[in-house]
Image 1 (cartoon, rainbow, N blue to C red):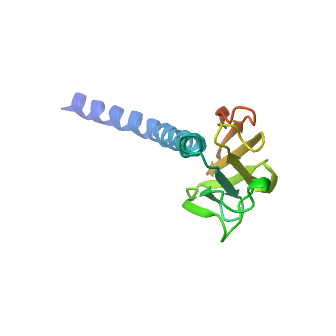
Image 2 (image 1 turned 120 degrees about the horizontal axis):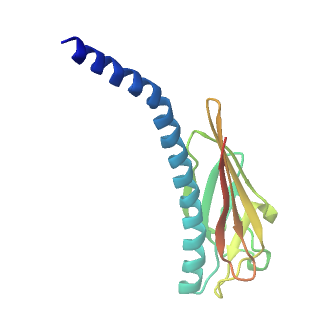
Length: 156
């Protein structure tokens, strides 16, 4: 009976030590998943633009922490998001643990043309914080091809 109690206590101690690591791993996996979701939005906008032969774009609102997916129908030469004039497809909010969203594009907007190119090259920066842990990522879009990629994901 004493051996059984020792085994139960040992398993309990190991589980208590491992629980914070599991929590951290789950948080990091969530951040990676959200980063991949944003890459998916960029790639979908580019694909829709090529398929439907009209400009699709994403507007990154760092204050509201939202990403607006839209069809650019107003002021096409500017390749910007014109609230109330462009056709909004979706507006996605970042998860609550995301503290920071910044896009280096002019007017925080990237528009994909029907040939697959993007209105400009730029980066999207994301950060989340959970207690004492930080996650950072940078996504890039290349203007000439419109291709987007995850440049890095770091966890501290």
